[in-house]
Every structure is written in C-alpha cells, then in structure tokens.
Length: 472
View 1 (cartoon, rainbow, N blue to C red):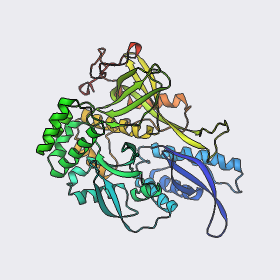
View 2 (view 1 turned 90 degrees about the horizontal axis):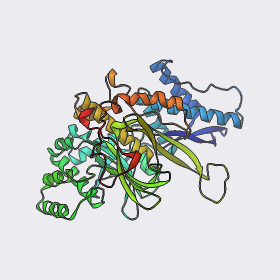
View 3 (view 1 turned 30 degrees about the vertical axis):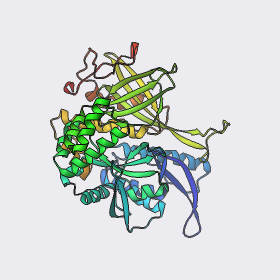
View 4 (view 1 turned 90 degrees about the vertical axis):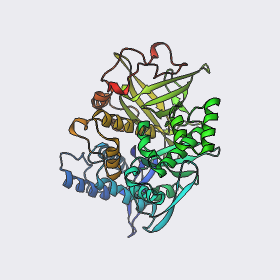
C-alpha cells in the first residue's frame, strides 16, 4: 500500500476556530483526514508501546501559528512518518496503527456505527449479502461471508476480499486487496460509484493448494466459479479442443475434472492487469501484465507493432519498489500541479537478474502498480514458507488471524518500502534491495529455461534465464 499526504485543508472546528487537516491517501485515493494532534497522539502511543528506538522521527510541535511554508514542511514530514510506520514490519502490522486508520476513515466519511447489509460478489457474478456493522474490519467481513457460504474456518485464509472495478464492457480491474487498516463498507461506500465491487477470490498462487480447497464442497464451488470466469474473460488461454473438453465436463457437472484440466492451461490462476506502459525492451512500449506462477508475464507491443511475450520470475528479482508522483492532467498547459489539476502517477520498478552477472531495472507505469507489488510480495511469502518446510495452511491461518510471524532468519524477506518520489535515494534502495538477496540470488542456473519464455519471446541481450522452485 502506498501512503501519501499530497494535500492539506483548512477546516472549521466545533467552536468556530479553524485547523489544518492532513489528507492521508492510500494508492492515490483519500482514506482519511486527520489533525496534527491526532497523529501526535498516535506517535506517543506507539512510542510508549514499542520504545523510542523503534519509532521514526515525528515533526515537533510549534508554539505559534504555522506559516504556509511551515505547513508544507510539516505535511512532507508527516507523510514520511506515515510511510515509515507503515513500512516497518512491526509497527505497520500493529493493531494500534491499523485501528487508528480505521477510526479515522470512519470519522472522515462521517458514517456512524450501525448494522447494514453489504454485497460481496463471487466470480460467477452471484452476490452474497452479509449483515455487518459499518465499523467491521476486513477480517470481520471475510468471516461473515465465509459463515454465509458455510466455508469451514480452516479454509477462510485461502481467500481474500478484493476491491474491483467493472467496466461497461464487463472487464474487471483489480484495484487492491482489502487491507487490515480499512473498513470495507466505508471503503466501498466512499467511492460513490456502482462500478466498484468487493470480490471474493482465492489468495494463494501455487495450484498445489487447490487440493485443500477442493476437498470441501463450498471451496470446490468457489474455485470452479473462478476458473470458469477466468476462462470466459480470456485470462486463461484455451484452444478449440480444450474448449470442447471443458464444455463436456461442464455439462456433466464434473467440477473437479474441469479444474484439473484448467490447471494444465496457460495462465491458470493468473491475475490480468489493464494495458499499461513499460520501458522493456524499449521505452514507451505498451504492455499487458499478468501475475501468477511466481512471475510477471509481459505481452509487449513494440513501436514497430510487433508483439512479444516474456516472463520475469520473482525468484530472479533482487528487489522492487513502487513510486508515485503528481502529474498535471492534460489540459494543454504546463502549469505546476495543484490539487484540482493533478493525478497520481504510479510506477512499479524491479531489479532483475537478466544473466549471471547482469542486473537491470524494469519499470511498469500503471495505476495498478500497488496491486502488482502486493502480488509479488504474496508470491515471495509462499516461496519462503515452502523453502523453510512450513505449511501454507498455517501461513494462511496466521494471515487470517493477524500478521504473519516469520522466524528471525526470514525477517528480512520483504519487499522494499514504498517510496514517495520517482527519484529515490539510490543508497537507500541498495541497502533495501539486499533484503531479498537470500530469495532471488540463490541457485542461479547458467542455462536458459523454456519455462520463462513462450515461443515468441524477447531476443538478443534480453534473454531470460530461468530458476525453478526447486532451486530455492
């Protein structure tokens, strides 16, 4: 998640006085408005609980009224503070931090705590209506959906709630996975658009875990519905003969066999993102990115209209980062950004081991950059559990019940913090990138792997070298 405070507002208090509100945005969308005093209170609580050595620096109080320049300076300092807290694996996952954000979100949207109904979409288009409180957090809503569907407790962690936007053509855009610091009802209501929905979808990548889900009737139905939907949307590639087999299995009601056949198809279990821009293999190339099978798959349209395809394995990514910047909305002028005339530009960049001794940065410019980063992180989490001999079921249960506790040897394995500038400090990136070295730079093979590239692949200096899960 990318936290920013791009703007401030002067607002009126209850007694008629005015104060400066700091607008906290998540992924470029307003999450909440808070006063300096509220953030100071949070800071003092965190410091009391975790100690001064753990908590990042907080901008000091001022005796006199702040000038506009001082307000801007404080805004920048508070933004860096919020990013630092969120990026810290201990503080960012703490209930203290998350409950503060949930409460602030509810207060900002002025939605009282009361009983309501909320529609959760399934992959087949059906809706499950659950009775919840407006103040229920993501885990509470997921539990309510599971109870309504009769999904066993030990399978709840295999699924997550996603915020999606449905286009007029039926296309589905994944905005983000709902997080522990937000209230799903408030999040969806505040968007004030019927295009947005909350979708239930599996939250793991390795198809080997499908077996756990399919052993249960409800789990089987959910996985079957997702597989059918992905095929109908064209996310899973199917030829005529495979389509005929799938149709036959569907008519027979052979759901397990349908899924087993689906597992053999290209891009099974992938999430497909909207068309965007990349600098690989050339600047300004149009690309469709898909995430799955521990990789990012690229379908690139070159400037000469030629189409190329290739895959970047997460096991060969040394690190990745997400950056944001304010850019003017095209209006024929070159005026600097203002809150009314700017939009957030998001980029995902990852450093990739192209060959045994050559690393290269690859950048994707997409409004779904955060979602791509979340996908990469969850892939790394699964691979680390597998490498350590742990149980994916235990990991998912811990994720469902709270933050994942990793042993000391794995504490460093996480994606680099999200940066607040497209021109980050290089030294900081190098330090952070070493945290993934134990995952991505081990067991590198000098031979090319056909698993990384389709027949119509990238050529020349951009040949990818593969590494299998067994090499981890």
